[in-house]
Amino acid sequence: MPVKILFALLSIGLMFTAAAETDAPSVLIKSEPLRKQPMAENLTAYGSVTPATGATENISFPRAGQITRLFIVAGQMVKRGQTLAEFSTDPNAAALYHQAETTDVFARSELKRAEDLVSRQLATQSQLAAARKALQDAQANLAAQKNIGGDMTVQQIKASFDGVVSLLSVQQGDRVQAGFSILQLSKGGKLRATLGVEPEDIARLQVGMPTQIFSVFGKQPAVAAQVLQIHGVINPLTRLVDVDIELQGTAGGLLPGMQVRGTIELDSKESWVVPRSAVLRDTQGAFLFQVRDGHAQRIPVTVAIENGDSVAVSGALDSSLKVVVSGNYELQDGMMVRETQP
Image (tube, rainbow, N blue to C red; front, side, top):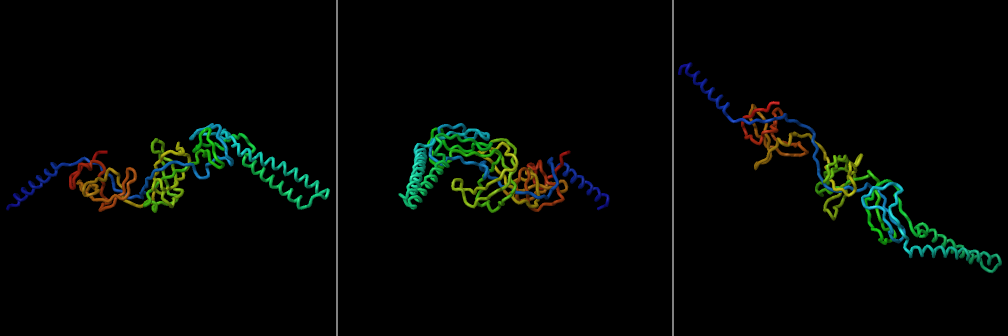
């Protein structure tokens, strides 16, 4: 075959190939360079806000009585010195004080009489010692009754610091036994969160891990926190393990009893990180597209960590090729692509 004819045929073939390339469908995409960076996995858990340990005061009375008046409600903010409740001593407790008072008066008179008889040699030293011992016992009993407030018919309880009534266990008119806590007062701003974590995830947690706390129903910004304590037993009510979270700085509008969501930052590791939009899934699993010579190349990947809009993946990735982050839903393996203009 003459050389001129052969050259003409080759030229025609190249023209058809170029035409086929030009007519082949292409997809408009946006791509980004593949990057490797440290990425932390987040563990999400739910719970509620509670007063911090040491920032609460449980108010109770060492004697039985009745709540005659309440001046506060649960959740109310109070100031130092503000009256919280009025308490009336139970008649039986008051009677014990009066009995102790009478016994003290009688013991004093008996000691005086014994001293007079001894001075006239009409009583022995042992009788005098018994009278002194009786007075000591009577004085001790009277002091004990005073310490528990038996001498007060009515007592008003005032707040010892600025805070919030985090718990109210009684209503006006209730009768309470000695030692029963009628309310709990919490210092303002001293809060923590208790989150419930699945038992199988506890081994991944460590004290001090950074945490962010969000209100479940509100739109307040996240509150910075850290893991304070990891409990060693399962809570019988939730069937989860309680993890105490210490709030740092301001509480960001959080109040005791509020439902919250916590994201605990686990240990980070170096990974290939792509935008969430780059990863697709079908019956064969997760995959993404990289751009090679103007064509889409499908790469199966394994998703390791998902954190917000970023995803850490592993697979046969080429660090020199860009990753398709937009327009990938229209792609098939090997399709031509064209980039969007910036």
